[in-house]
Image (cartoon, rainbow, N blue to C red):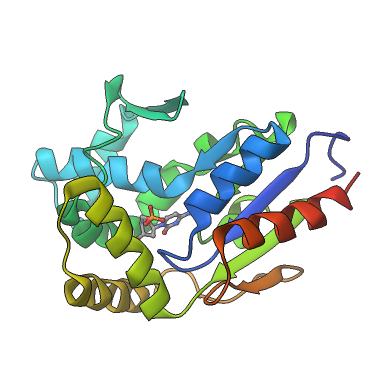
Length: 219
Ligand code: DC
């Protein structure tokens, strides 16, 4: 379906830690489009389920709790069921546990409509199934990846900056384990029509500029 001119849907797929969030946010800011961080939705769900001691295998309790789950984004903050969870969803515990929840089909199914809400107004959305499942008719599909070591290094630097300490080997281990788990849910491969970006040796600004060049061709 053709989308309104000037209101493109731009999607970034790829494995965890490839820079989808930071690159996507900057591309959105430069194009003055809303940014949809779908990983944050899965993280918020994991946070709420863990608090309520609902395990990923307890499908009936999960489904029940999901009925009253809501999420919104405002001024860079993430509000889940009205609560600001921006920091709470970025902890090592959530990093460890989130894949198990995001792998549950009922969880994935329950947030399809939430993710598509802003589509007609144009947006930049990031998440591993954006091009394949949520926005298969996106105007621009970017597959962002980087070596596990480069992705672990970025997470390490982010955590070091945020918390003053971080363990690179532990993070690399986690990246490899999450790739293995996440790839069971959605293949870590570019969707049909996606542009492949290996950002291993690229600077942040270079990645953003290249995507903006592709976006400029949409007009
Ligand atoms: O990108 P992230 O680290 O914030 O993602 C959190 C988890 O959710 C990660 O395990 C991948 C998963 N995820 C997903 O399965 N589908 C998405 N669209 C976004 C994230």
